[in-house]
Image (cartoon, rainbow, N blue to C red; front, side, top):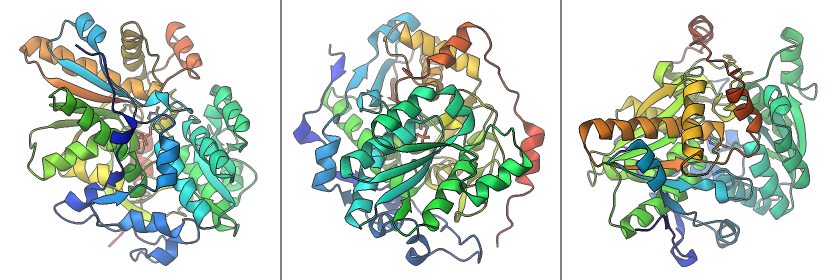
Length: 452
Ligand SMILES: *Cc1c(COP(=O)(O)O)cnc(C)c1O
């Protein structure tokens, strides 16, 4: 009757799993923002190292994890898998609930699973500085952690509303030696253009990405790094699901339901792609795989599946994905890491093809769920993670109704120890449940570029 299921260090995955190899037809290629033609490796070399460009387009099912990367991942990996017995009991559910706990990394989330290899490959190719954006600050702190380990500098454009709401994330970046700038800033053309139009903007990931890409593209020694969305990020996160599958197998389990929250899709990809692969290849065809997003930024549930820019200024390649329009600025909810207009092209494709499904919840109901989790399992989860928790609780309650003893696995993507102001707002009853901003989304969708 174990509560924590560990893997030993020797059983840590040595290869990443690439779900692209198991898609029935290839992914639609990214397109050049100016020409509308598929981008080639040369287009991306201005801002990415060659090794990551190769991984982005690789057809290989498995890709070896470099030894120096494994050495760093071992600081916290393999991460524990927990059986949520106290939560099960509180819900009086016959379901068995397991969670993969990614909050054990030094920055406190799944994000260093990719910041570490990304910085490593940049270091190998002689890059001295990384520019990036951060929403709630988790990615910025994960990148600062990785650049510190490999001796690079970091410039981090942090979405302004989070810069104000989450001061301690910024402090972490400073401890690890990175520079953190509120976005939009006056440092870049894209930032200045936005500030001129809307001086009071709360900022958005899309704006911050424009600033970081511009910074990287205009400095030779600097590359850009993205914490989510792209195929190579999903690839690096596959260690989560690979470990979880091993850990579950060691107690003779395989999940009926796999759940993760979705911002750009990376932690969800990490927990779910190995299981999506099993589903696509017919090994486990019936797994119910659920991505959970905020109702105020409902990319997968209300967006269009079409080509759009990854950023506001239209500097990034066009990606075929679910999008709310690249200039949509989501309401300032506390789950800053889920405020993104687009989504991973692979996650989008799998939703479109019906391999996985998506749902959305409002802020107050997810904080209610996070409170239930904290009062049973003890962990105070990040506001992003609380979306997954809410869905898990709903699935478990359905099992109580039906009497089914399903095995539910979810990714507990990070801790909320620096998000206590959000919990304070929940208790002060000042959390706003933003209505689905239908008009704004309709307007921004009308500005999605026409392709083909
Ligand atoms: C960044 C973040 C997310 C959302 O990003 P994804 O790329 O969708 O995973 C979710 N949870 C935590 C704890 C995060 O830091």
